[in-house]
Length: 168
Image 1 (spheres, helix red, strand yellow):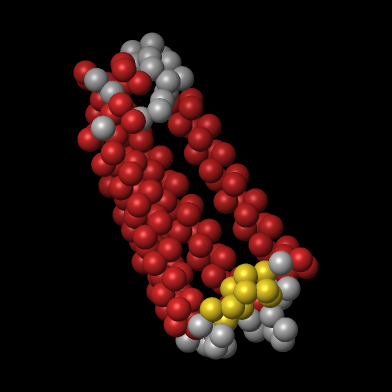
Image 2 (tube, helix red, strand yellow):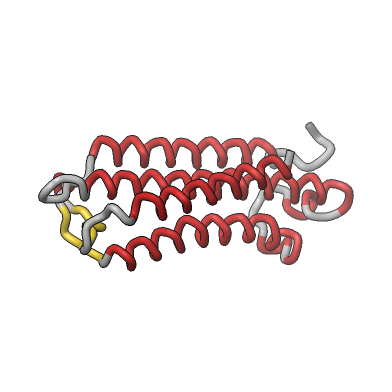
């Protein structure tokens, strides 16, 4: 299962990066990138700067999240903040705990990449009208789905570690 999660995360990050590259060339220069009240543009970036920034975010942020949840718990288990950490991060329960944390990291990374790709598409749509206006309903739905996904991941993680290993 862990390999499937990792593959899905990598696949979505690649798809998001390709979407950003494919749609950024059609953006105006400069690109409206920050929006205030009523979705009105109030911040701008060069098209190339925006494209590089979004590529760095859609690849770098999920990679950092995934690495922190896969590598860090194995390297520094004292930094892991889960209930019954001492029991979960030592002995025979450790591989299962590390796999669960890696799965959480993959899910969180996937949600983050999807959110950033969706935000990019909203920015593309905003720049198709004059003056640029961010579709607020789309943004709020995107944000709500992202936060719901994070909440579900956190609930699943809390349920997974609610009891010490061997007491299920």
